Image 1 (spheres, rainbow, N blue to C red):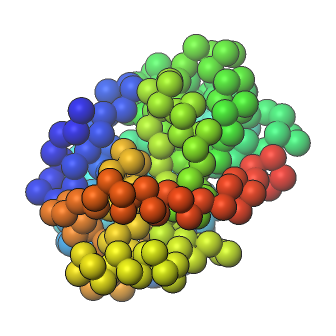
Image 2 (cartoon, one colour):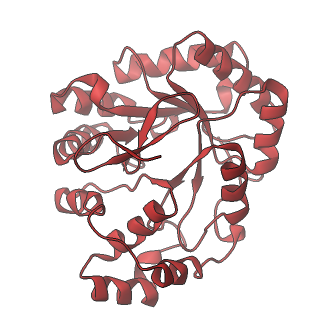
Length: 282
């Protein structure tokens, strides 16, 4: 099931045929200037997956970083997301075109609905618009971000089209077990945002993590990112430090023992510890 995209980043196949690197660079909350520098550094370090969004306000910088890196466009998998303003069958195409313009690219590989925004209740129409772009060959992959199983069931039932990816806040403190089980049943790839912790979920300071880092001779972030990989998850950690960028990518030459991976999973505080997409969105 796992192929090679680069010497350092294995890939997983997506339902509609693309191959997604198992570890990439998250770019929130970088501004354009920082994103330009970090994206170029990351690609130089071996990253081949770059994640951005309309609401991050850094797509222009990401695009400049991609060009500054100086490698062929087809060697990098680029993801962006659109916000609630574009939740409409015909509006999605405009969101897509505007995103391409900001990035300065001819295409993106994966386009996501950033949040379901159920209070607005137009995410089914947004999904229909994405399905049209996929059918027209404008995108290699389409997906969702922060969708719960109930949201996913609704868009699948309405269109018969599966998301390639659902990107959710996920770490050993927020393991999203029920969401991952739904994904597994349907062949949807789980992508983890804030994979090494974020607001109120600083997993790197957990005693279990620091002890495993000591025992394995790795950084705490490497331990947690390896946990994601062994669960079959795609992680997109954010770092702007060149050394940490390289460290975060250097996780494919060791493995956690099953009992150690289980000890990390046992840190789960439940879905309530993470973002609730029924209550938040943009």
